[in-house]
Image (cartoon, rainbow, N blue to C red; front, side, top):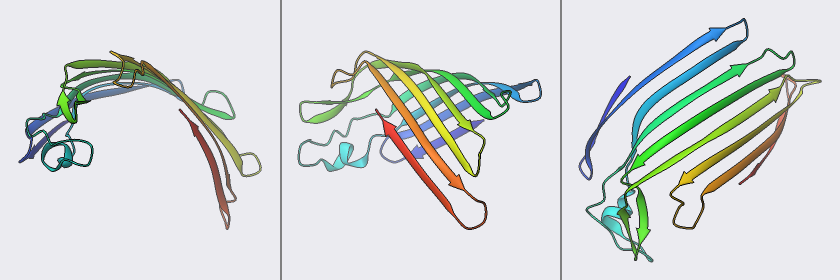
Length: 170
């Protein structure tokens, strides 16, 4: 695919992407993708300012090349599972500095994600996930690695009642 964006603050940006999936076996797939993307700075960072920072009209969007690969399967009878590895190479990183935001070089973020969900048993299923992101160089606040945990329970009788309880830990 290809996407073209244009705005009057930061100009234009073209984002190509390519992805492929391969089904192996009856219940498993491999997937891979590469894509170019961007993050436009919020309007308040370029022209509005705020209580604790000044606007910077010369800010450019962050530019990223993203690479991902993974496998997804229902080979285990009562469990859906998915694993993804990723790498994001970012240029013109948006960083706070001396009361304003600036573009400050490049960054690499890479990691792995795991997800799993059970099939419903008596209308109740469980979902969990884990992600780790390695950030190089570390963020302004010193974070070099971020761990995220998710767990949740879902009840759905498919007729009259549905309830979900999810937790998220970073």
